[in-house]
Image 1: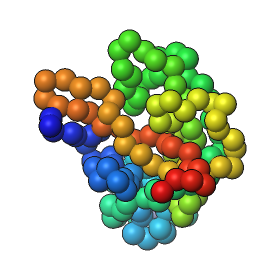
Image 2 (image 1 turned 180 degrees about the vertical axis):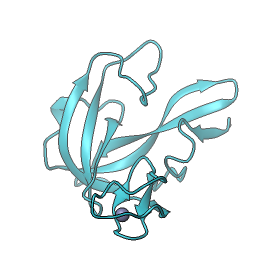
Image 3 (image 1 turned 90 degrees about the vertical axis):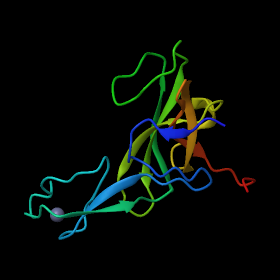
Image 4 (image 1 turned 30 degrees about the vertical axis):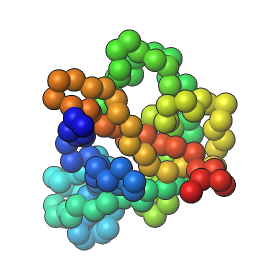
Length: 146
Ligand SMILES: [Zn+2]
């Protein structure tokens, strides 16, 4: 087994059964941020510069989606050669914050419906001599899922 590490260090936990995105939360007003914000709170009514790291909800509602048939810009890292995939915008269950991510391999836009429940998954994005690089993706939760 090659070591499996995150494409973006510290953006998500590497628990493959129940991965979490890692964000920060303002210590004063409680606003959540992903990717992590550690400078100044963006809430105009808040002047805090203190944040705590927190795991974010693993599930949320599909808010919007699109088909990526072109090479996406940073921070997405694409396999080479590029394979078209779906991108989902998911509103996190607790934080009510929309987080973009690729949809798990093999799931196209025709399997997606706005409002459906999505959960976070980890997939290998690419593999090199040092090991596998993992990225977070969104996967539709079906009634039959264990
Ligand atoms: Zn704040």
